Image (cartoon, rainbow, N blue to C red; front, side, top):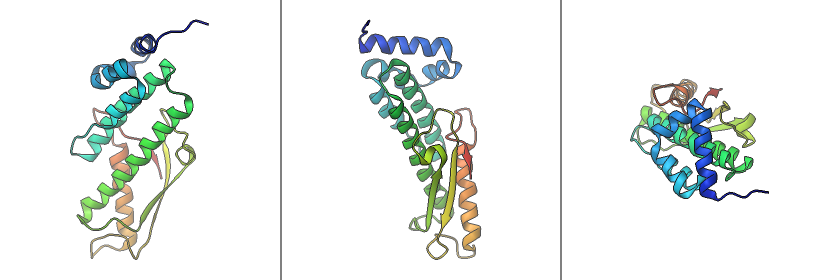
Length: 186
């Protein structure tokens, strides 16, 4: 069996990504810092680089993180550094964290510094089983407690929960030039 060095496997993965995937080819150009970290330090370090992206705007930050994460994970997958379980876990962990951040942002937009309480999201399907792949959507159920849900005084709890749910979906799946965070099925 022929053994290649990690550096050689990484170069090969980047070349195959460039040649065979328009998404990854563009990501290699747009997210050069993730590609560079992968080439120098491997997939796990590239994941950290991708997730360290911040923009100030939660939706833009999450889209950039997701784009970088997809590149880092795909390169780790192609190079053999990341087994399937790590690939699906990385994608699932990111989606879980992105949903939490987007929901908190949706609430904060409406009620400012009110304590975050009375809302929970249940993940079904592939996210619920921690098995997201690169193109999976997320199947979610949003539950709320009408007594503790943060809301404006004039909003009924059900109306406020629906607003939060709609904004959550908007933050996660609106497409911009940087793509989307995750497709949502409520």
